[in-house]
Length: 190
Image (tube, rainbow, N blue to C red; front, side, top):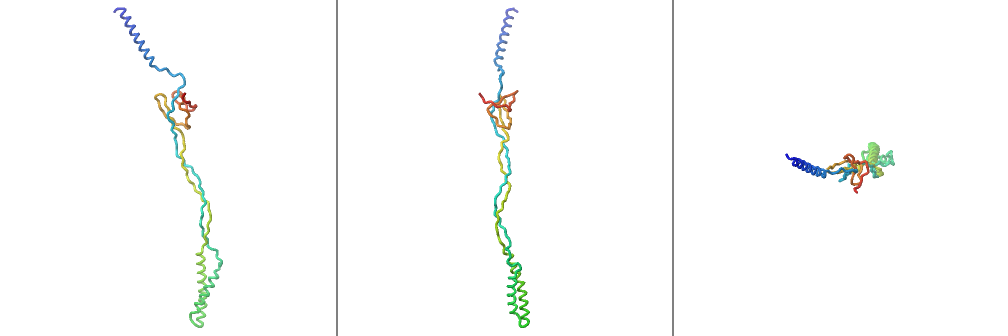
């Protein structure tokens, strides 16, 4: 083969290879030399329902019944009235010594009957009175409490979610070895 053909072919291959290497080198994106940040794209509060006990007290009017105090604890009035009525009725029965016996029996029977009547009347007489009492009971108040935040962040084609205790400030976070540094102050975009 001719020496000039070999040299020409070699130069053309090297020339094309140089162009291909140059094109490949142009497509490579240089690595960022400064700090890298991820963009915060969403912050969603995480809540839970919490029940808190609370005591509620109120004054309530309560009705009470007490037996009326007896002005005649031995029921003398009922006994006497019954004896008079019984004696009058007994006196209407019989004649002579039988009349006397019927009158005495009427007085004794009427006395017992009058005493019983007075006792029943007093038992049915009750006195009603009112008092105010403080009554308390426990109620449960329900409320929503924020327990954290689901933070969606994106860096390049990667999108992830992290749960944080506190709401992040700013719209980006510093990345260290591809992971967000939530413990550092967040930066706003320039």
